[in-house]
View (cartoon, rainbow over the protein chains, first blue to last red):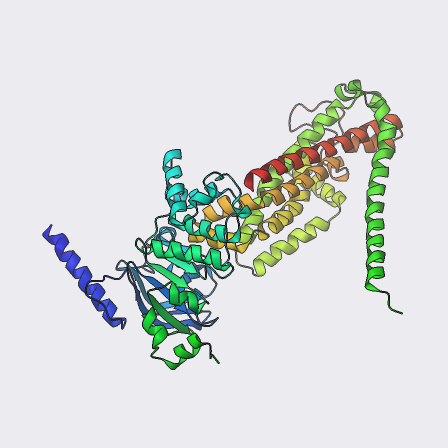
Length: 280
Length: 278
């Protein structure tokens, strides 16, 4: 009991220190979910991310904005180690999830990716039924039994605000859904894994305003349970659907802060140029 | 003088239509030519009896059995090897000199005339490995012959699976093996199946390669190490030696109908499978 308490305090202290090292004002009550600590990512020697440090807190939506080629997606794909698959990828620095280095030697990468549910820019349902799409991940994790799977499917679809629209046609091919429904299915598919963090890579880039609103509603609802990292090209979306915003430019983190502050009173000139559309 | 787009369009459509119609017409003509001559002699007796007096009388049952043996065995050997090679080439290696060499080799193999495969099979399987004229020698030779087709069609099918499926699988925590077996191969199965069906057809109709390896025994094969005569070879011998043209046409009809039946079955299975996947 006492030992557990000590460990707890130690872990807290370590995380606070890490947060301070990372240059983040760490509110003492918040224990960051993820800490990115001086992280540099390179592909074949060319640095795509330069010395990035930031934290991702529980129950927050962190938006990442910036022009194309600024490293937003690379950053997101570093968080769940998808970049490992690219030829010539290497990194320096650390990324901690609940205090553990995700690039550590004994990390089970598939299990890690299940903890960091990712939704891609283009809705990418697998060419199977809605039901099969949703149980694919849980089955890899070892979920079995019709009742258990049914329950996972329903919970996930409800979480993505899709249940009412598809509950009677779970056997239908997922590729026959509309674009917005497909994207919510992809969101449900990662929710079915009960992840620790949601990573959304421009999830609304191909969607109309109504479908976008539905995804944003789901995100607002989900942040109570999961921190959400949202990469977006749409600064208005960042302004309305996030709690904090980070601005990436040419692989560097220029500025990060509460969304309202960043949008009303950006510290950095490049940030204000970008959000007001005077870029370049 | 320039033609108006409308006229150009009409000319193009006419030419394309005419060429396509010619292809179909030639195909139908060949099939009809053989079937009209063969069908009158294609009786139940012909299908269920052994040939008598070198095939002048009786039926082709041993040839049917022999063809099924040789072609079936060949595809059972070539399909797994070919599909696994394709998976290796597309999913487990990075593009490089090795993959280029393997691919170039497969393309070269695909272009080699079947009689050369027959000669190789004769020298290597029949003589060197001492398998003699047998179902196994024939099947192994045919397997080598259709392997490039299976590798290349499977490779194309696997390559056509969208990259996003791979990202999604990894993102959902699939290992490479999960991704390959549960997502990529599953999506590519219709294409892989098409390649295998084409190969079955080639095995059924191959003559030169089996002549030199499976032999031309007229009796019913009772083991994989006995010689046999396939339908295509039987047809060739009946026609070439002038033994009996009616029997030759009847044999050819059996061959054509068998290939038609296989293709129809395969497409039906594939359609059902695709419907299930979609």
